[in-house]
Image 1 (cartoon, protein in one colour):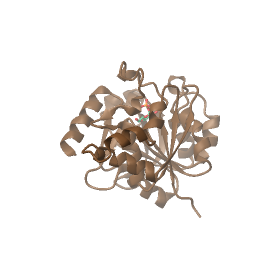
Image 2 (cartoon, rainbow, N blue to C red):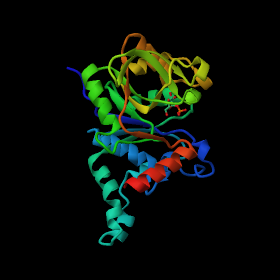
Image 3 (cartoon, rainbow, N blue to C red):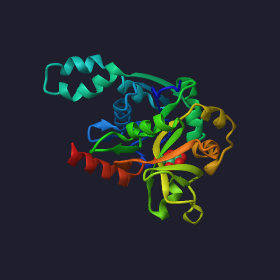
Length: 275
Ligand code: G1P
């Protein structure tokens, strides 16, 4: 029988240099959109997809992440019974229902390497990956990860979330091409990490949501550094794609690139209006 996806991996070791000096002493994943850190949005998305085991790949200077997903007795004592208490209900519920485990990426060798570092937390199971700086919201229904799990359950192979982007932006993303299966599904045949527009196989960009089958770890072990001298998950996925085992899914909902200042401001305005 095929295994269910019960774990979500969050690569969170990057330096967040685009947000310096804010990210000098706090992890970029802890930057708040309104009152919630980016990573909490990602965890809530995983939780809403029925995933309760959160596996986080951190690095030096990222301890605030562990403290955030833990009780804070002194603070809670102070605010219990006051009007502020309700501000903690969301995070408290997460702490009570989810488990968190951590491992550190000692060297920054790319997203593929970060995911491989998470193998020790994930084991030999299919798993989800959320890049917290891609903040997603689907006001009209299921969260993006839940939508992807439905695709995974049907096809039992790796799934990447994609969206159409302006052609001039292809050099910011992994870009896919393949055989159109339905309005929202493409069987991936080619994928390239951050191609220049003239080399891009399409304008369908991968956003930071993946469901990966565990054979990806063996592939990643063999994957040579690619774009930028880093081990790229896109290159490893291409190996699976060559066997017809990657589906790209055009998700329903909105996605904000909170790795950029513009995207971050957009997300802030959106959630301020929405919530
Ligand atoms: C990473 C991936 C890229 C993907 C992107 C989504 O790039 O390498 O393929 O399109 O995430 O956000 P990064 O944004 O970490 O440079």
